[in-house]
Structures are given as C-alpha cells and as structure tokens.
Length: 114
Image (tube, rainbow, N blue to C red; front, top):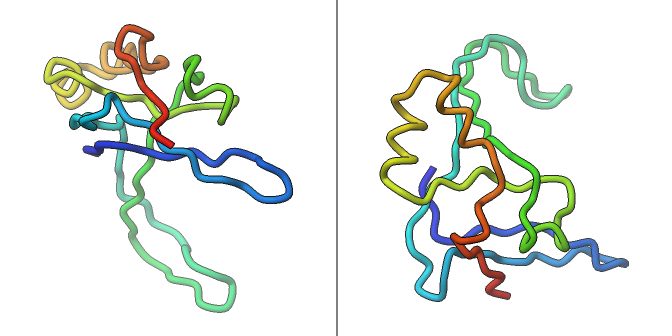
C-alpha cells in the first residue's frame, strides 16, 4: 500500500490526538507491507450482517522504532522504502519477505511532521 505520510493516535487524556509521520520534509513515496485474501463468513453488524465471500486487507506491523514509540508504544506499520524491498515483499518466498518485518531502521529517518 503506497503512502507519503501516516498517523498514529497519541493518548493525550482526556482525548486522543492524531500525530503524523513521514520519511522526510518532501514526504517521498514509501509503502506499507500488507496482505489481502478472500474470506468467507459473516461481516457487518448484528443488525445488518453480510454473508458471503469478502476481501480482507491487513497491514503488517512490528515493534515501534524510537520515533514512533513515544506516540504508539505497542507497534508501527512495516515500512518498505526501496524498490528492492517492494520487490522482496511482492515476489520473494514468505520466509524471505517476512525478514522485512522490523521497525524502520534509524538510518532511514522517519520524522514526526506534526
């Protein structure tokens, strides 16, 4: 899933505040590692259930890096920053692709933009 910036919610009691992150001031393109698959079952609400086959999408997460951790200490999305990483995620055997499940390395400076 391509992106230029993403947000996490910070608990600023009594409410939550949305905090934004990008790879730099010019917000270059990157991608989240994600998967989709068909699933058969019931979705929707109890009042309005939807039976059948559905396409589900999920983002892969990892431990947060030092930039995201103060805002969201439990996890951050897996960020793919190079064409080589995108190719690995899309084409490599699962054992190799899952090696990308790590916090964004510190040398690829993710910065808080708000």
